[in-house]
Length: 304
Ligand SMILES: [Zn+2]
Image (tube, protein in one colour):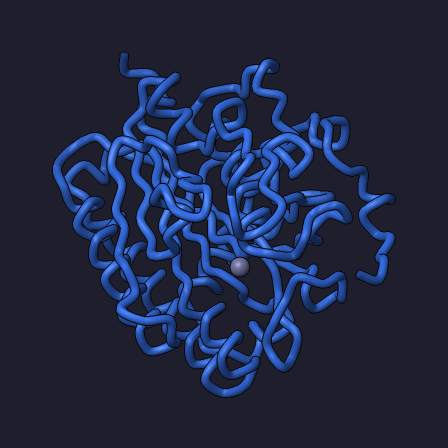
């Protein structure tokens, strides 16, 4: 089986709560590099999706909206992840691929608060914060990055992974979107740089073609906080580079649901219609016709 798709690999790095409007003024060379090699573009959280981490991350990694996956808040009880699994679980269970997921927010990785979101990747890593503070979360993200570097450095097949970095969001909740928040985004970018280096240093890298996707789930109000419908809270973004993503070509009408759809497509796995994904690969010719919310509807903003 030496077809081209056997060499395809995807790494998704999720950085929680990064405001798009602040990025141009920050020192984020690794994110800038991905944007130059591919694109970095805004995503509006859909009208029916609360601007909270639980529903937004679930949409990002399942490729379906809240009406299907059923995660409406930061508790995951009542979810329908058995029908709409995250991509690391589906790839491992149904597609014969090896996957991993690593991070420090409990309900994504553990049977806590109705989780886990990542039910059964091939490898799973969870790093518990020693307390709920920005400093403790920076430590968590350091260890999460080290764990992901370790997994990427193993001489074994690895087709897709998800790395969750949570310190940026935690900092905004505690301290607002000021100086500490900006420094935390820059720290996340340095961790992104380490992950990119770990990909390049893989033993089998010469025979692999990697797609890198960096995504945030929602924004923040200036004073810190989200969950409402303001533009600052609803504006998220996706950056990606890799095969089939021409430099500077921004996908039209980008949705959070497109991330999982792109992961499958990049791995040479056309999404099965029975999966009823709401998104489509970033440059899919079908992307204007797939389910989810048409762009006209998404432009309507409502007060919470
Ligand atoms: Zn979040």
